Amino acid sequence: MISFNYETDFQLLNQDKLSEWITNTIKEEHFKEGDINYVFCDDEYLHKLNVEFLQHDTFTDIISFDYAVGKELHGDIFISVERVEDNAKNLEVNFEAELHRVMIHGILHYCGYKDKDEEDIIEMRQKEDFYLNKLN
Image (cartoon, rainbow, N blue to C red; front, side, top):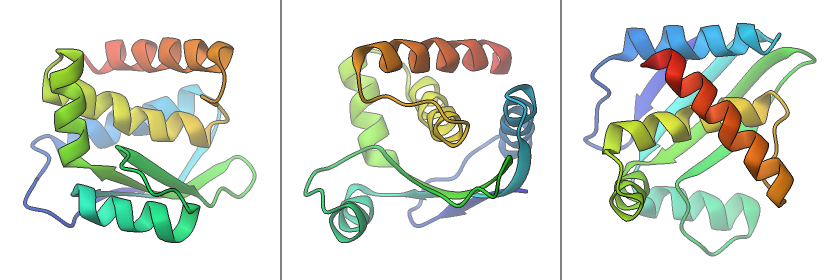
């Protein structure tokens, strides 16, 4: 089950459509959907998690905690709406497009995709684009 939670005033407008898109992505990657919680928050909230759990004293747009059991995906995906907004401006894309990229990025991590080296980053971006095209 996909759930959307809010620690800020932000609210998704199309939760049902996004939930279906995420579910379909998981199936297409040959995984089973478990409990996946998205938590939309601000920079301060996510920075605190980054320091406490990852010992990174930096701002980030997403942190995902993976609790998968075999091929069944479970996890918590925290997204800073503020950071996504800033990234969208810097990348000259609209906010919603960047938000969707970040949302599916977390799922792709659960499916085993990495983004630590150049080759992995290219593969991750290709997968993000592939699934973003399915949403649009």
